[in-house]
Image (tube, rainbow over the protein chains, first blue to last red):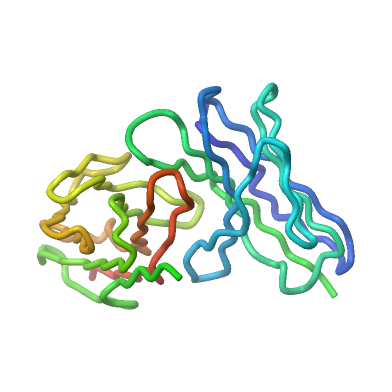
Length: 111
Length: 111
């Protein structure tokens, strides 16, 4: 089983729609969780950290469910500029400060 | 803002050459990482370093070595480049359990 699993998509949704991704992780001792965004041929960039109580940043909401070992990302009122690959990232308890990246979920917002 | 700088955006080398990829960060982060990213395979960790002169193998260290002589600089070395090392190489740095910051990436082609 992979340490971090995501549905690779692609997700194609119309502009203005709400879209949600889930990501599961295997190590119950995982401590830190993040969502990154990666545009085509660019480096990954931090979208938001994920806190235990859930957190929101504008149109983006991240949630953590420790019991079921998954994190989610919700995008409301999607924009064309939201088209990207979204990477789920987990700091497992193993090793130093190593992060484990999911393979990413590809999202395309259509006009 | 954290700045992670990779020495080249694009690089073309020949099979058998020794290749050096350089990465510098300006935020005094103790942790630095080298990844490669290939279509369908996601980000794969090659090596990481949690202090000067310290290094640990990642998931795919074969054919690579690293050097961390100064805290701000982490070098990836391809001892004898092969065509299967053609890839996008990404350097990152991180402080403790904070999010990781990536450089722009180096697109390396081995002919």
